Length: 335
Image (cartoon, helix red, strand yellow):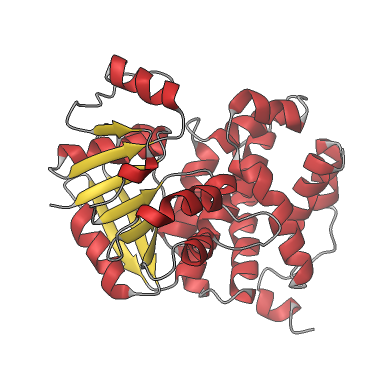
């Protein structure tokens, strides 16, 4: 059994803490939000995000980040915009042999870095493993069978995380393509926002199936240009994560998209729903695809909708009216 510290008391952080505690690990949860920690301690659950999920007294809840040391695994369950800030705060107290595990799905604004790259910069010397795949916190916390992927530059440490965190309800595969695994997890949020918009506009299964299929195509297109393996996007961290995020009401990206499709402004939709990683990731991905000279028409239209005031019906019409092409990219990209 391992000593595990979870940084972040949001839904996924608490769900992982509960699961790890249930399977015998020694678990600590840190949060910068004292009121949230106190409420969880008082209520024995995270009433807002995971109502009914028992947070046992055996889970140590703290707000002093200097107390996170003496652990084997440190899990970052932090929104992408705050990963670097929390890493800077935590770095002085992290044991030199601790394995850093990131479960956030996003890209850093301005630098365009994947979150593992951010952690490697701020916590130099510690191995970093990304955990990604189709995994809603609400289902992980109550023990629904879930399968995800541990990816890292170091397969030794990916295998270690697989060994320590796998259990009867969580099956973990390993993958050495950390670029592809992280990009799949981040970029699928863009397509999930679009799926929600289509739902909000009243469109059906045909529309969503087309969106998801062409969406994973452009995700893979950018991923390969950035050094990922194309096959990764056909796996759990690609199409698997895309399916779960585009089709579930657990998905904040989809819920925000539904509001936008119903006529709510993007900014108000995000404010209503809370953390919507796809909103922030769209801007980063749009800038990335331009710098890499990669065509991402769905991302382009979502960017125009979120940040330039483009009407969603016009955006969809422009997508449907694009020049006719062969489905095989090897044919049209060779011209």
